Length: 236
Image (cartoon, rainbow, N blue to C red; front, side, top):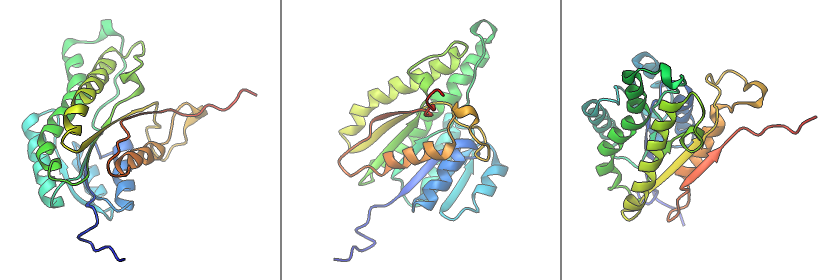
């Protein structure tokens, strides 16, 4: 029996923080895997380069820490994608600094970048996700979201907030058929062209493939929470 295009599930996704690092690799791998990708980030030049990737349908430059800017960007991307089946909240920035040296405004900025940007993007995307037959919300957290490290008070606080919020809405959105998945990666190689040094970090491609696994879980299932770390070699 031949399945018509009408019967096939849609695969339309928005990736936030898609101009560099994991976000860019995510957009590229999802596009290669048959997803129609919308990308949003602050760096308009990098987004223009990403837009030439086959499968990347639309890009928008926006500061997602601004609720209205996030709403407009998500709405415009959804319109170009002609709907939405998944949102990957990847936008954020690692910040490590001794707590005593962290200014109040810097602490707040880290919370905005790593937590509130996801809240604002999700609020804008949710009405569209509810119209999808197989909807997914992927939250890129961090090992710091479950295992806080010294010197990372602001970053760990932001990622803990992301984790707590995601676990709370898991039950709410599950009842509406929307899968909420958390991913806690360890250290990721900053530049995908670099080699992970001394096995202390992972190439972003490996993390992106785990996101793809979460997105393409069988209908009726959800890969709710995953920790992914580099595998250390045995001692010689």
